[in-house]
Amino acid sequence: MNDFLQVASLSDLPQGQTLCVEIDGREVLLCHTAEGVYAVDNLCSHADARLCDGKLKGQKILCPLHGAAFDVRDGSALTRPAITPIASHSVTVDDDAILVALTD
Image (cartoon, rainbow, N blue to C red; front, side, top):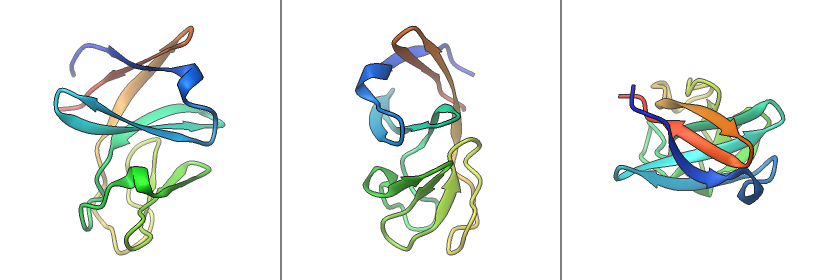
């Protein structure tokens, strides 16, 4: 696992919202849920749609293309047509700073 990098401020990401950031050339979607902030890859494993264009519903991010749902806590595919999980990344919040460590 890589070192944690500051990628955003908590004040830029209200609860219930998402924010797409780029880390080392990789698009990562930050998701602020009632349980905390999570980070997953920004591409749907089914059809490579950008998840930042979808909707965050509770702990799920919904793909805008075919409606596949992924659990933002661990990247698991919850509904078809997606069956392959997406990568999830470690997140820590330090005061107002959101820090992410990419998973290999």
